[in-house]
Image (cartoon, rainbow over all chains, first blue to last red; front, side, top):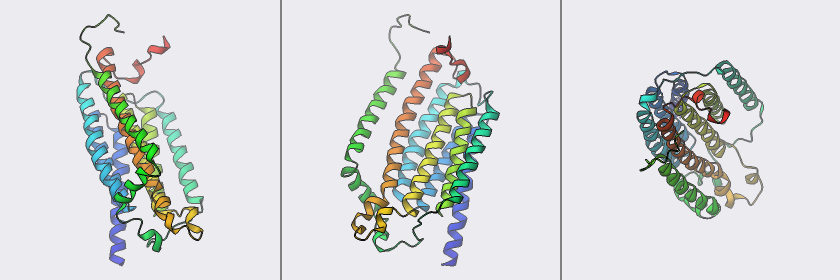
Amino acid sequence: MAFDNLFSEIVFWFLAAASVGSAALVVRLRSIFRAALMLVVSFLAVAGLFTMANAEFLAVVQVLVYGGGIAVLVIFAVMMTRDVDQGNQATAVQPVALALGAALLGALVYSVAQAEWALLPESLPAPLAAVFVETPARLGRLLLSDYALAFEAAGVLLLAAVIGALSLVREREAPEGDDA
Amino acid sequence: MLERLLIVSAVLFCIGLYGVLSRRHVIAILMSLEIMFNAVNVALVAFSRYAAPAALRFPGAAEDAERFALAGQTLALFVIVVAAAEVALGLALVIAIARRRDSINISDLNLLRR
């Protein structure tokens, strides 16, 4: 059991360092293509963090949607805009952004440390222990009962996003002189 | 474990915020936005697993355990859906802008100011 704890400690710190470190590289690297690759590393490490909180299904969804779909979309966009790419430069408000980020981080860490959480134990009590097995089936039942309306709305949202994206990038056959 | 996951989430969120505010490249801003979405998801999943919902502390609430304990994961699922839709539209906009204006530098996109 002690070995088990040590192992999960090591895995946790590795995943935390990987996700935070690669996220920091995304906002620091000058090459936008390398930043996109680092973003994929961050997504995969976050998927690992999900499995450490008993959210295996979400970890799989994260790898499929973020590590697969969104990463490919971002890299495609980087490739298609390569000829106007000027690198990942900082704006004039960078010091303000740094100060704002540091202040928010301080406030968040302080409030996490101060709060009194009603924590569940590491080994779950009887009614809850059953909840975190076969989560995909349970999530599916919840999506089609309690969250049915939100589920349908998400479908409409995705359809609208796909149609909107297609109409935005479609080449017009006859330009009508409305170019900016 | 809850505190640690929340702190990782806070650090990721602040890195994303810094990136959104300080980068000039539109795709870099979108990527920082994705980091922020991810940070929120980490917090949601951590709360879902480690924080006891108030409703579970009342007797007879055990049959609703699933509903309360998985609310965070369901919300995270919807966040992923919305983020995917947002990134598809955002990158389509970036490509359309790059075609028309020969720049995807956020400082050059000040058409509304003139």
